Amino acid sequence: MAARADRPPILPRVGAMIGVGIVLVLGLIAAAIRPDWQVDPIVINLPSAKPGRPPQLPQASGSATPSMRPLPPPGAPPDLSWIKWVLLALAIAALLVLLGVIAMRLLAVRQMYAARPDDEIEVTEDALPDLPTLQQGAATAEERLLAIGNPTDAIIAAWLALEEAADASGVHRRPAQTPTEFTADVLGRTGVPSEPVRTLLGLYLRARFAAAPSSADDLATARRCIRDLATSWQTFAQAEAAEGRP
Image 1 (cartoon, rainbow, N blue to C red):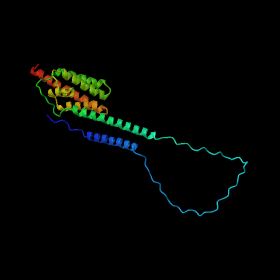
Image 2 (image 1 turned 30 degrees about the horizontal axis):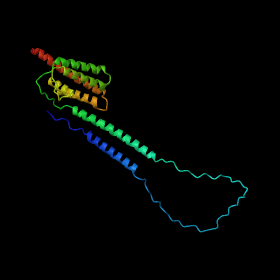
Image 3 (image 1 turned 90 degrees about the vertical axis):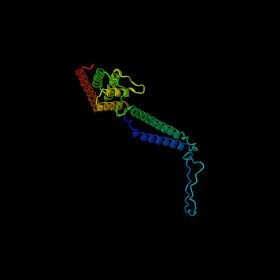
Image 4 (image 1 turned 120 degrees about the vertical axis):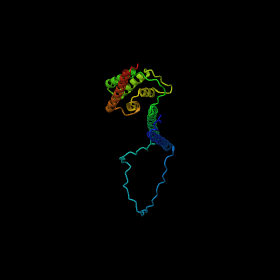
């Protein structure tokens, strides 16, 4: 049995992004709690002007009314120190949301690669699945591909139809097998080429776990794979009937 796929190259990059986000959060906290910057003023000694006679201002009479009233002394400026704490909280919240999204995508990618089967399908029992049941499952899968408009939902529904057929084919699923692995195992027991099975399974995993939706080309490829499986099973059934096998 071939080894499972290596760890996806995206995982180290996601881990580095999470590390950078943590460093940014710590930097923002340190910048908020440190004391204010103190800058010493620069003193420049300029030559003093020669003393002269001050100009004489006209004396106002006692009966004259002043043209302007004295301004009241300025009050204390408002305390705006809370603004930096609000901005710090918003920045930390945004970074935490970003890290949460990255962590969720990382978990989805890990699940996708964990569910990917080996390149060679392992067959541990001699029991063969019931071909008519699988043929009916392929027909149902193709009907779902044609009936569901969204390619992503259609591919997922088509694979689930094959899972239902595999479960009813007479082969017992091992406790350690997932439904996806069990379905790939059952399809491989029939002797069909491995290419349509692996291609269809890859389309299903991408439709279920990838962020980008499936395309119309993916839908056409899935339909071609199901038709190839149905054709192979039809050929096997005709050969068994010609040999007189039940």
